[in-house]
Figure (cartoon, rainbow, N blue to C red):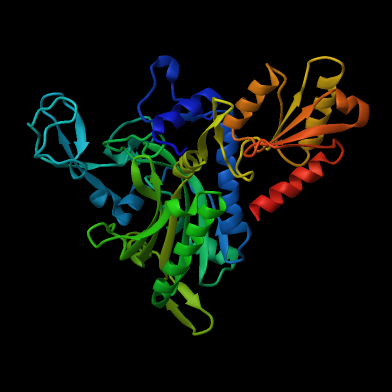
Length: 438
């Protein structure tokens, strides 16, 4: 059975240690979340896979890690101070706040039924802070609303030191902050989030070709994560949706329980960003083409994905409910490449030397992939716990193991079990992982 409500995911995440409410013991802070042990592992696997796909596997994409705090003139040049705004309205009765473009102000407030609204006004989404001991206008700084500008201002530094020739890309993963008026749908829209962004610098005449190329590449990556292909789509932006810096954009969208929503944007940013930084900094940010002996300002095709949205999508897509022997079984059918635990090892009973054998098996497994030792409760309950955690494989150590050195290997999705030598278990699981991933 497919997931019908995002609340099922929220409950599972708390129960199994994927996600916790931030500052929970103090009542929580709205729209902020902490990644628990399993969530941290899974998030890292998603980021590592993105980095491998975008940077490691390509000779013409390099990485960097820019600072969160940047000179305030960066945001003047990029247009974020003047253009990074959402229209906001308040209900005069209950004081609830909404984005004006997300509601119909001719209808009553969803919370109190009142129809008396304030006039729409623009609200800048950047978090403002202060650098130094004195809080005044001279010391104002902002938490970055995107990681991209750190790449643009370092274009010359990276291009010359990495000795890259156009077309080439610069990629990074990092935190960004947006003071959203309305948040919700769990991890989907939050004020603190992590981005995986790549700015691909091309000749201005070649942007359409590269926009098409990267749109398909990025769609394929989500499929390779194990996400159901027919729940993904590529949707071009209409003219009224385009950001101030973009002349064309394709969104990769997923069909969530709350509807089709964006996972990643692939945008033709043209030469806007480098043009703006050239004008405001008075520095040259152009490219010398050794083939033509000409200098020009490169255009940019951007691929910008949210780590947290990718994480949420993998959970939503993997969530499954089944009936097994008249009991409900909840499992996450996560791809082994992103599952936080690859294999769990269970001693059938906590005596007769079985726990010691299980611990030795786990130690051997951890040389190759993540493994977990679980000896608490009945074997059935342990299977169910690992099913909910998305663990693809389980190995049970029983009395046959002490006699002939064999163990039981269980598959999460089919629940089928096979008998195999404990000395062959690591090679077999590695083989199964490679088959499924490839």
